Image (tube, rainbow over all chains, first blue to last red; front, side, top):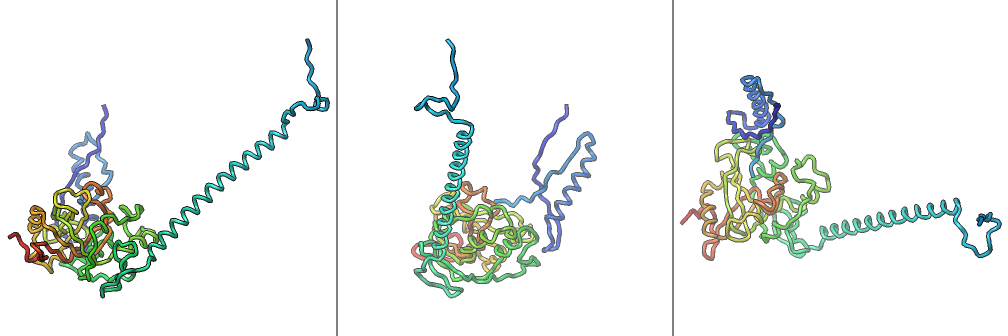
Length: 58
Length: 288
C-alpha cells in the first residue's frame, strides 16, 4: 500500500554568521541539503521539502 | 357540438383581449428595465453610504484638537477623546548594535527599524483601552510594510510612532526566541522580552497589549531584570510602560487568545512599578 504523510518538524539551528547576513536564507538552504543527504539513507521513501518557514514565536 | 375560433377581426365587442406576441415582448422588456433600474438604485445607495462613511472618517481624522502637549513634535489630543494625534512624528534614532544594523538580518526591514529605535520621547499618558481598542486595517495583517497600500499606511501612520505611556498589570513575561530584528542573536542579551500588559491583575492575556523591551534599549537599563517583571506580576503590582506605539502585523492569529490587539508598545523605553504611592523605575525596583 502506498502511503504519504506530511510532517512538521521544528528544528533549532545554531552557528556563527556575520550579524547582518540573512541567517534564514543560509539555514533554510542548509536544512534542505541536510534532508536531501539524509534521504539517501532511506531509498524506500521519497522526501519532498514543501516549505521552510521561520518560527517567529508569539 | 362544434367549436369555432373567432378570428381577431371577428372578436366579440367587450371580450378580453389576449396578449399577442408583441404584447409579451413589451412586458418582458418592461420587466428587464425594472430589474436594471433596481440594480442601479441599489448600487447608488451603496455608493452613497460608502461615501458618507469615508467623509465621517475624514472628519474624525481632522477633528478639532482639544489639548496640546509635548515638545518632540506637536501632540494634540484627538477630538474623540482617544489617543493623541501627532501629525509630525519624531524621527527614530537608530544604532548598529554589536554589528547588527537597525534593519536586522532579514524579514520586514521597515518593521525592524521601528522595533530597533532607541530614542526617548515625551511620553503621553493614554488609557489602556485607547490602545487595546484601537482598530487596524485587516489588509495589513501578515503583510510586510513594502506591500501596504497608501491608504493602509495612512491609517496606521496616524498613530504609529507616538510616544505613549500606559498603566496596567503584567500578565506574563518571557524571553523571545532569536529574531530578524536582532540578527538572530542566540544569547539572551540579543533577544527581546515579550511582556503581556493586562488591564487587571492575573494571568488572563486575551485582552492584553504586548509590550517589548529590546536588546538595544536594555543596554541603557542594565539593571532591568525580567524576574522583577515576574515579581510585579505575582504581586499584582501596577506598572507603567512608556515607549513607542507600533503595529506588528505578524501575529493576528493570536488576537483574542494571547493578546487583545496587534498594536504594541515596542520598544519600551521606560518601566515603572507602583510601590505605595510612588512610581519606582524598574531599574531600582528589584524584588524587595
